[in-house]
Image 1: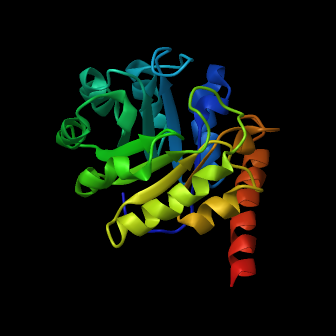
Image 2 (image 1 turned 180 degrees about the horizontal axis):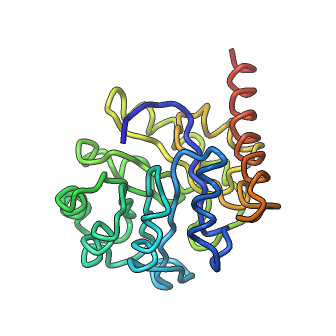
Image 3 (image 1 turned 90 degrees about the vertical axis):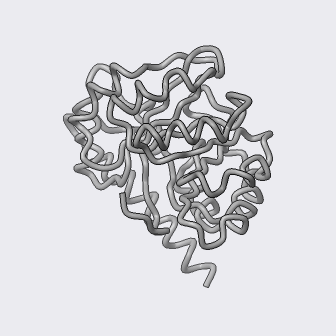
Length: 233
């Protein structure tokens, strides 16, 4: 997994057809996505239940790019090895999910995965200042986690910019998760994000059997970011 700050689109399969997840993962990759984002929810830390390690393991052969596994679960430590063994490339844990974030990140790294920390909207950027040298990614939640299709919380843009300044030259990705559309993507990228998680904005209107719409949706996100970048110059 090579580090760079170029724009990366990471469709969230939370918005895919769960009856055809393998085909959906292949379709979005064939249509130009960069990462595949898997939202794991436990019905406890967040008010929804999705899937666990067996589904991640079943999808691994269908994902050729980066398998980006976002654990919205608590406690998280007992499950790290299971998701690592299932094939996760990146394991992102929530800063709010346990009392020993540094220990959790060490466990993720020891399991052979890249480390990520997610911050809920009410959690300040300062929550990760003491673990910056242990992380490969910080995920800014721009909705309250638990469900897809929510509206982007624009008050998170200053947090993204603060994190970008805090990170400096460290090779740490800034990911934004929640409410990403062609309208909100340019602001998130301009604030400092390089990985944009998009669910319904990618999967709307398409199917695994007719995936060209996915490609059009991914292209629309890229085009909007590029247009915003040019306008800012």
